[in-house]
Length: 532
DNA sequence: CTAGGGTTAG
Figure 1 (cartoon, rainbow, N blue to C red):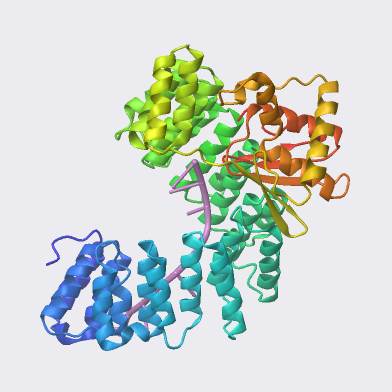
Figure 2: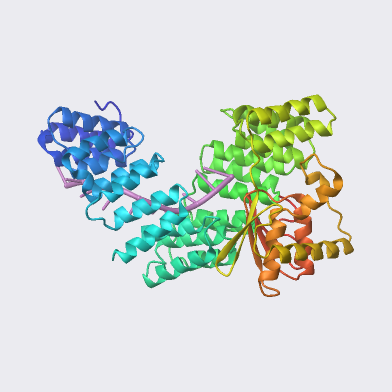
């Protein structure tokens, strides 16, 4: 029975419900269950659901649609078995609730089966399935769903658009696709709907077009917490800390209630600009003024803030004061900083922690083995290599993507599979000569391989982002900007080289690495101010 | 008296 509820109004409602003797009515049972679910009372809702069945009251379509949102307290497959008997699963409402529950457990295939069994699929069912593919990263499938539903005469609504725009924000989706859906949203007169415009803002920011993101934000007539948070995060990803903080101040002025996401954005902005003291100040504001309890995400941001700035003692202090042990992600932050700031001892500790937690993480092994090599400890180094072999750990391949004429071209390091490979390598040769004339010296410490120096230079020159840039230079008109997306962080040598390339080719080059955006100007300066 | 889908973070 219901012993406790977080909401006093629900306790009153429950008493009234029991006293008025309306226990025989499926509608009142469902209303009560729904009430608890809307007030953070999943356990109580599921208890009531069992109780009604015990008392012989048969749940209807409404009851099943409602109870299926009570994850993780209920199991979708159990409810599934119950609804199959009544054929409710073929109805759009119950079917949608069921498929969504499967999606939330990561079972997209199950969800797709339920979806195909729905008799009259309405826009909610279509949108839920589309969002399901989106959430599991099946970009192509999600886009297919969109064209299928429109061809079937179903009209997309604001939820459909926000999902599909979110899909277009993925690194593998093309900007052209995103713009097409933007146009479609305008035609449908849904582009100014809050959830659509926030999705647009995020898409443009994630695709490297911070100006368009800004424009969407400025044109929003009304804003909610998500709009403000999206703009702060967008600026943060682009390293525009001052603008992110201005948005924050504006929020404060307008007395918009902030949440923990707001501060993740603010801390990220400070981290990317090296604003350690500012970050500390906002941490205090969060805890003291906003009374928001720091989560592990916030702690992770603070570790990032300190370690990127080279203040590893302070970063370790945050870890020591956390209520839970640090995650492998946090140790990865420490490890990366140790490499930049050459703190071998701590780096070793971090790498060992990561390997203990995630034995398949290749980067940690490679860094650890190199650190031993640098210290001349060949025995330890051999041990690490042996461990890698035994565990069959493979290095994560680094990719760079560039979009030219609505087509995305992918490059691996040393890639020779592109149809225009000869011209690409010729361009690289040409660049290499001109860079040397400018006095550029390759920084071979970024090559984490046991090979001789000449080869190291060749390896650096063929890093995937350079291949993508070389292709971009030959495949697009002179002077037009280039946008490169990559799945790993840009190395220090490539960073130095891209600054020079932007200058000698007089192009703006934007690179999105796994962490943030770099805007390389034709003046040879990067927006990150060499701090990343 | 009762219903299902979305957008922000790292």
